[in-house]
Image (cartoon, rainbow, N blue to C red):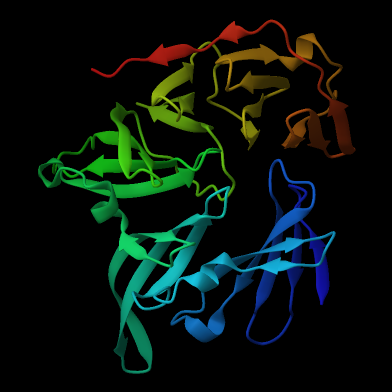
Amino acid sequence: MDYIIAEDGSIALRDCSQNDIYFRISRIPGSSDTVMVTVRRVEESHVENCDYPVFYNIETGEIMDPLANVPELFDYGDPSSILVSPSRRWALVDCFEYVEDGDSYMQTGHNEYLCNLETGSMVLLADAMQLDETQNLQEENAFWGSDDTLYVWFSEQTGEENVPYWIAAYTPESGTLRYLNRCLNDPHNIHTEARDYLGEFYDAGGLLYLLVTDAANGTQWTLTDVDLNGSTCCSEVPNRLVLAVGDRVYLVDEVEKGYVCLNDLLAMPEEMIEAITLQSENFLCIYTERGCYCYVLTEITETTPLTQWQPD
């Protein structure tokens, strides 16, 4: 078994067998004793891409497999993505349906399912949320909030070139839709850890902006004072984001909707920045050709406010 430490600080354990079975270990924000272990379930998958999460307590050695309580998990196709809520009571499962086509399989469908990990039920997300079918909304991406709220992005199928996007906040416990708001775009990345804020780059007619979504209320905020068109790298943890633009490094406080230039507070490397990583809210690593520079970030008391985006 090989041990590989990734650049973002996570640890991957990879079995170098011919089946390319692998394991990935991820930290759980706020937990000091439990990690998530993602396993590739090749025996249950048509195309060998079922990433199956279990949880391991590093102090007691206990392995928790909440998805084992869902008997229908593999009945609706190949679960390519499984997002488990912070309480481990709910899971969002992205399933691809296949039919046999000679010696291979052909994809025929794609649906999102909401699983209750206590009762074992598995229902279509669209049925659970009970959205208005006349709106022609198609699910694009989703992630869990810290309080088990499910935040879902939709695209409106209008047939136009500029597709309208919406964000919804759904509470599985009560089965209620807290809001359905217009938004600028849908996030490109799948986030497996719970968060209440999300930072993404947004291309507005060739101009690149940073867009922060406050998922708790569905508002969106933009960083328009900094020219991001150029050499830009970024890193995000729940509640904070850093980005490097040339030799300037900016810290964005997603909770306070403000930002600060760290060059005004810290001594930055003189050589070109190649990569940047937030290991936690308060620990920053900057990589250059000479090596890695590490910083402990103190409390930021004054920030420049972001601009709130208003839908038309």
